[in-house]
Length: 473
Image (cartoon, rainbow, N blue to C red; front, side, top):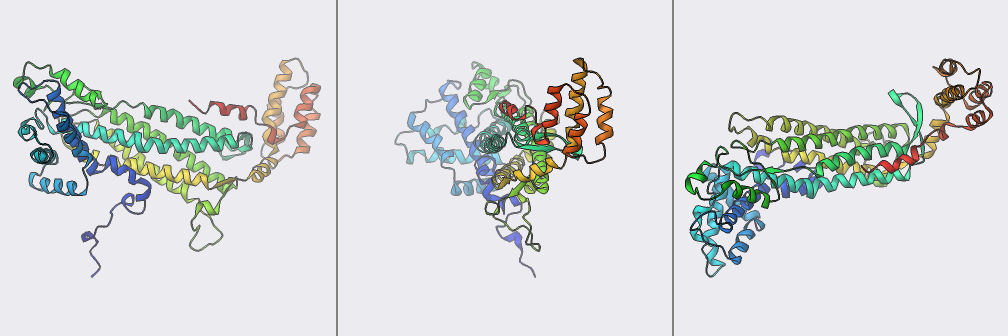
């Protein structure tokens, strides 16, 4: 009988297996343990807030030592605490209730750390007026905010910087364009990279400014239990100041759940960022296959083929493409499902949100691969130049446009420039001598004739080098 892997601590997904080093930082924000740690943060901060703002008549004022003790609980949430919480949940069969009981245990333990404390007497303030979703929506908001700003955005920024650096280094390196896959008017390698950098910078700005919402308003969003229990308190104000105190935007109008619209917006913007990179990965892969980029063997650090020793496969870009696709699929599914809830509440979002981590993880893995892949590329300027020199016909656009402009300016005998260039160049290879002969036969004004006769495909890049200044949005 084969070994039963289900009895061993073996990862089910590649993100927790072979790719763990690239995505491990997300565990601090989007793992189950991180969610429970942030649930503790929310429960503790709610308890502190209620006592500080005087929302509960008769509630004690907590000392600085007691507040410090409380806030140290989630900071010390480690392996032993994770195991203890799991044991409690085995009894409660409810994850948020388990957090409540875990916190109450810590309140009871406070006298061992603080000589004089009221914490064992404030059990009933823990989770007061809260439905589970009051805690969950805020905890998830903290999780996603941390993952976005502390892990994903810095990694995305590193990639953008790498693309920008490569763009600047190659701003004047002429390259044959390939619109529709066919030889077309030249550009520069740097300008094409700058296009990608600007697009990514735009999405980066949107993601960095994502508004993260939260709510705390009870079982159906009415503050019903709050008002009937303590009608003298301004519960909307207490809720607003609490949510904003967590660094979130207060949502004043919800059902039992915060509707997740902000999440859908964030996931759409992240998927858009991913899709820009899918196109980038495919293009770089193609440029490698054309010989425009040579892969640095030392930087790649991998075997190209198990059977063909001459090969160095562009695996970083292939891996990135695949993981970006997976991330987009998850982000799309999350964005479409989370904004739909049956009447005031159903539990579909509970399962869906647990997949935010993989959605971020596959994208983060792709970012890592792209940064490492770019670091392993060397531009083969000779290959770029040879490709340009083999496609002189791309100057047809320049010549017929100059003919039109000269005709408008009063030159004669330059009728039907497009048709004349089409007859010369379409479907056939034309070299430098043939184009120069054609230019000299047109009767162009002397200055225009000289300019066109001296032009090469490598010269025909327009303002491309100067356009790099627009990379930053």
